[in-house]
Each structure stands twice: as structure tokens, then as C-alpha cells.
Length: 323
Ligand code: F6P
Image (cartoon, rainbow, N blue to C red; front, side, top):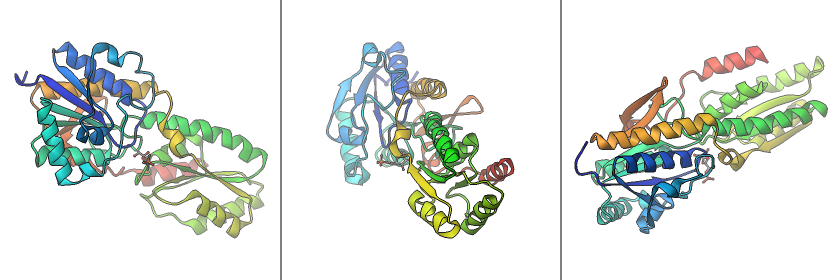
């Protein structure tokens, strides 16, 4: 064990995701088990800059494993985005005797913690907390499994009305610049098509397919759109314009970020929280922790940003074969 670690700081940053609370619980209780104090930093990097820092005991994380959101709250901080902001954050970390910082967040939060580590020497560990599943070094990020299930619940309901009223539905899902949620949701919902940023999409072919289907009596379609690829209202308007088929759109939006975390997210978060503390205990910093092929996996924080899922073409092919 690295002797000097007496206190760990923990924050959640960027978009919240179901499972973050389970990760906080794991970090707090695992640290306390090893005699390390934990400071909870409220509202991400912004709360750090405002010294909104609270001590966390065993009971402070009671009854949160099943709750969505994050008890530490979260934010996107403009001030922390600057090097001046990071220098101020580093000084506050020292002032509060925080020996290492665990950041639960997504791409932007990881970039911030990488800089905090590399330029300002703050020992940081990243935990992949984002519904987008766009980070390297882990099969899944915290919140993604729940977000997919939440989107599916709505899409299954939309399918009922789409079929009954013989309409095309265009459904937009979150994911920032990643089409991962959209692709998984499309496969799991049995959607007819999916538009994602990772692949060029042939709109003409889709319009033609709808027209051809129409002739055969197939009128209801579910088309999933990743927010990073297109806007559902425009896709829907163009379908009506080019095919004449009545089309509706739904933007699922932030509903995907809330709700009770799935079992998978709770387990992932629980394992990752403990693994992050283990890294600190063993003197590893500037690392991002994940789970790959069911094993804890560690990579450099600087390499964790911007995962591009490689097999989107194959998944798309499968989707089209199965429709
Ligand atoms: O990164 C998580 C995410 O939910 C993205 O999928 C989405 O693009 C973004 O956050 C939305 O951010 P905000 O809650 O600030 O609108």
C-alpha cells in the first residue's frame, strides 16, 4: 500500500448516468474498509472550484445503490475547462489534503482529469461514467445498459401505435457523437433502420425501401436516429416528402439518463469503484479503469477518450438481414 494516501476525493462530472451512485457507494465503503477517508466533491469540477466538499461516511451512501442520478450531483464547468481553473482546482485539492482524486465521468471529464494529472500533478483515476459508451478500455460504461433498456421500453410502446396506425416512426436517441446506443437499441428493438455517425447513410435507399414496402403492404417502420448523426424531425419530414407515408418522430432525450440502474450497471459500478481504490492503494495514477471481457482492465487516462466502435458495419448488415 502506498503509505501516504490518507484521503481520497470523489466527484461525478458531465452527464449523469444510472449506476453512478453504486460507484460512489463502492468507492466510499471500500476506502473506509482500508482506513482511507473519503471527501465527496459536489457538482463535479465546479463544486471543487467552489470548495463544496463534504466528508463521506459509511451511512452517507446507504440506500443509494438502486437510485439513478448521482447524490454528489454533477455539472459541466466552464471555469475548470481553462488551465487557470485547473491550477485553482489543484490548489484546493492540496488545501483539503486530498491525496488522490477519483473522477466518474465521460469523455470531457476524462480529458479534464488527464490534464489535471499531467500538467498539475494531481493523482487521478477515471471511472467511465456516461451512458454513451464512448470510452476506451472498457466494454461498457456506467449507465449505458440502463439507458438502452429505458429507450427500449419506450420504443416497444411506440411500435404498438406505429403498427396500429400504419405509420413510420423516427426515434432519436442520445449518445453524443457515438452511435453505440442507437445501434444497440435498433438491434434490440428489431428496428427497420438506424442512422449513426459512424456510417454514411443512404437516405434515398431508405425512402425507396419504404416505398417498395408500401407496395407490398408494409407500412409501419421504426427508424432509430443517433443524435450525433441527424435530427429526427428533419429525417421524418423528408420521409413524408419523398414517400408520402405518414411519419411521426419522437426525441427520447433525457429520459434515457434517469431511472433505476440495471443489474449490469450496478455490478459494473460496484466492481469499478473498488478497482479504482485498489489502483490508488497500489500507487497507480493517471489511469482509467474499466472491465474488458469480464476482467478489470486499466489503461492510461489519456488513451481512454473517444472510443470508436469498430464493428458498426457488421451490426448494420445484421440489422438489415433481420428486418
Ligand atoms: O454524455 C451524456 C449525454 O447524455 C449525451 O448523450 C448527450 O449528448 C449529452 O449528455 C446531453 O447533455 P446535457 O444534459 O448537458 O444536455
